[in-house]
Image (cartoon, rainbow over all chains, first blue to last red; front, side):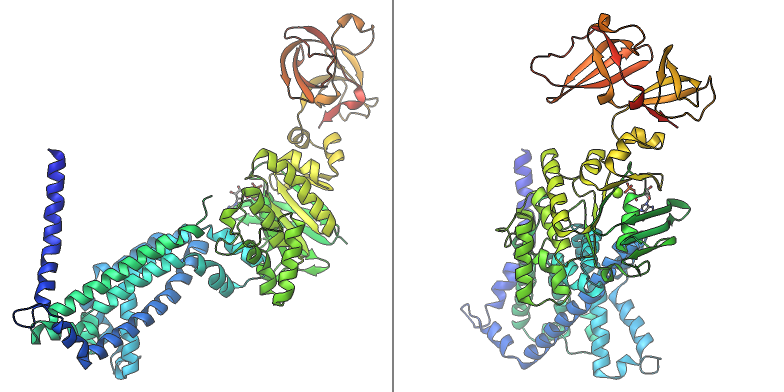
Length: 260
Length: 355
Ligand SMILES: Nc1ncnc2c1ncn2[C@@H]1O[C@H](COP(=O)(O)OP(=O)(O)O)[C@@H](O)[C@H]1O
Ligand SMILES: [Mg+2]
């Protein structure tokens, strides 16, 4: 009886989760009347606006990942090594982006960095792009921080650092040659999460008025019939690919992990 | 002046003074052990030499150069840790070559030096393996090779054998000492294991509560401990109370029997002093009748017999307390049975007077 109930629960869950997806997939294939086709996808792919916004978001995601790694890895390293008492504080800080709505954050940015402020970032395209990247990095921070923190917890940080130092390594070498390679898997999973977040992000890009993929999705949703479904399916596939890559990276790393 | 010179080193963590005025000179090529119970400050002294801690007070000199405030990566000191600390993402060869690469040595020279070091530690075929594919003993040997590859001025080892199995621990002792001799590298070895310290070192520093209690050759430390702590920490010890009869002449009585000690005693006549005996200087006389009158002999009863192989450790109860003694195994002489009445004999000159 219990078994039946739990199977039933799983079935309900699967239906609840997959039915809309299947429906959307089916709808996205129905652009040509009377038969299934990939016309919607072809139309999306051929849209120059899709190409421009998607390309822009991919570039922004990559920049955000690099920026996030450069900020988070040394910070977590230093806190774990020298200021372990600050860890609860770090946990709290890095949770804030999940608690504070993005709209609040972006309005804060605009207030702080508008053209009449001390640092008029929004005055130029490049400045706005930089601001957007910082915003993305903040949104990804909870995930990036936790991924890197878990990665660093798995190695004997202090002794490895000291071993490298006694062999002549300075801080940069320690970070680049010893710490980063040993938390690469953790960093990768943080990176894929960041990628998934940035690709779908709407609020920041829209309010900072940058041509990102998120606003394009919303625009397409309001102005086209079949293409939004195709776009949604594609975005889903992309997110899932990221998740699978995380799994793959974790699995791939198994043989370099040392059983003590 | 000593090659490595630690003078008046002090280290406090907050209000907790962990190292209290520590002086030590290590000659070039010498192997010195820091021996002491856990928490006595051995690691802290070593970490100050390596540069991971800054002394609150005092100075560290290597070959005349003051390195007290030099950063760890500028000291050219090799360090081996208890936890091996090999870089898990690098192969054995890359681990050993790590310091050379940072020093900017050419790739060709690195390959040659790494091969030389791997041969030295007896793992010439293991260069392509990863640390997790090695046993603990092999990993620690690689860690040693890694520390030695850049030809450091001083080698520091912090309990490098503590994480290993007993058997490997013993064989690695000899191996480390052998390599150290071959290279003639000035070495400080930290351990809480007295057997390790005694068997490996040119000199031993016995530490207690952040101070060096005694510095000397293993033979000296073991046979002529200067303080009660050193006597008790190094080796097994029997203690007996004695009453001083003639302080200047070193004469005492134990259980009413006179005994003459090799040196004068700094106590008043009639005072009680502690005597200490190593198990190996106590002799067992199975037949109490053998003892002629006037010889010093304590009557005793065998309370426990532990057959260890080459040595038999016997515990005997006397009126002055329990005494452990060691007999060499002899195929024709079985150990005495439990409960047997025996006599214990020892010479006054083998007695250590506890201050
Ligand atoms: N970084 C530190 N902060 C505070 N106390 C420390 C620190 N390092 C060591 N201690 C304290 O100093 C004492 C000596 O430590 P240590 O040198 O590691 O001893 P040993 O190596 O002889 O076991 C211990 O009581 C330890 O708690
Ligand atoms: Mg220690």
